[in-house]
Length: 469
Image (cartoon, rainbow, N blue to C red; front, side):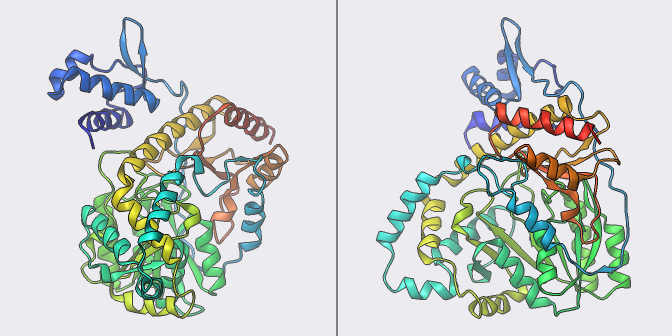
């Protein structure tokens, strides 16, 4: 990262934390140069970058000021603790009805599970594909199917090392997207009828996997900012024969919540005490807005209890369908089960991703992507404050590309979904994120697409529909 980019990230952190409040003047170029020990040109470059990210604006003959995105910021949701026993899962029909709404390209994609493809370096990836196919040894087409491309595994191991996780490339199993990795992990440690601790609300695909494998859900409440309730998890682990935990420790979908370092240590201590494996779904780990990436629970794992799953689908190449799992003590079982099902993701695509990670400027792309997402989050928050009822609540995650809205109690988000869809707007209604069909007055909105006039108009339409309940 260049010096001006580090300076921009440091000032962005001050804005996010509230040290520099909306409307407040940021240090002048001369003062910032003296405070941070950099040249005036470095400060100018940092300020230009912060302008591009929508965090500050210049006022003629007055200097730079923190942008006032929302004059009336909406408060944070209040998801009260609700402890439940084991629940049969039956949500697929409802989920598929929502997913079908996304097939029309003319629909405003607030209900999408992915960022805009316009944010991905698809042309550069295509060059990596061409280069890697020309250089691919003929025998690799067969040998790489079982273990995965060795260059890709090596690049992934290097990225783990940077995040504080030391693991051999042999522990990594390359999969067909993160969903295969998560499915394999769950199948290795459970049998039909077993209990699995999941988040509430949880990503709807989690519920679909449990439904398919005939597993029962034990829902653990998630705080909109701080993550899962460890007190309730401890009680459930002590009282119920839970065979596995499936959690997102950073930028949880749909809330965007993250466990801090201390809560991650306490979570891992619980896993150790009960010897319950954890499937760590960490597909949004690269989409943080701060200076430092969050360290996964896997970084604390000295017993191989954590199966850490990742993917390129959310941050680089959704259609390439390449994910992975660092399987800990279960790596060999996961690898064997994969060979009994899908055998391997595309070998040429694995080689293309390995080439891109080594030569394509992945970290430069990620910085641009994070900046775009942070700007788009601010735009959606500001628009919601303008158009939604004042008693609406919303999360403010420090990464990812989802906002979770809690509307007044009389709002039925399934009806909201249908009425919005009739107006050409998709969203993800709250009940698809719960095995018990909770969160009927909530919805998840995706801010991962460049903000434009159409986005703003869609928010105004949603606001009118919500106000009509």
